[in-house]
Image (cartoon, rainbow, N blue to C red; front, side):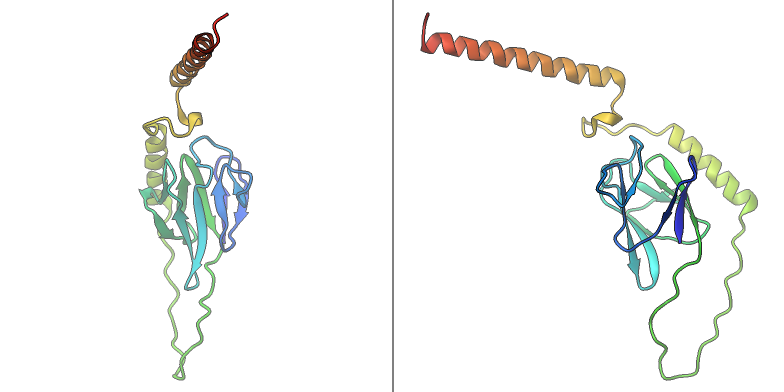
Amino acid sequence: MKLIRRDDGSEHALEEGMVFGRSPQCQATVSDSSISRRHAQVELRDGQWWMVDLGSSNGSARNGRKENAFPLQPGDLVTLGAVAFDVQGKAPAATAPLADSDPIEVAPEPPKPVADVAEKERARIRAELRNQKRSAGLGDLDQLSFSMKLGVFAVAVLVLIGVYYGVQFLGNMISPP
């Protein structure tokens, strides 16, 4: 199975332990300010691929529903932060051996209705992502608005000026000229 990014078409073939995030150390680097440095990890559980959120700021969702962990199925829409991926390919086959009994025949799953329902859901998710609130607190400075970044910069400059004059004052008190 693989995840295909909607906006640029980049593909990420799923591997056990694969981490999605902005950090260059991640196996799947996603350059977007809504993605945490280590956003989500892919796990193989009982022959099923799972996406597990790693405590990211903006969360992970499957088919528009935010969840901390969820199984991946072909046709799913996975959203990490504000970046959307389509799940494509075949689900991995179960690796557990059969018991000493007659083989069980499993009927194939009927195809999921995709056309109108999926398009409406995707439109709803896009609208939700456009109106998404930014995370509260300072956290990741890339997620702050320009005015907040300017305010943080101003406070940092004032603190440095205060430290400079404080050190000068203490130096003059210890060894007068």
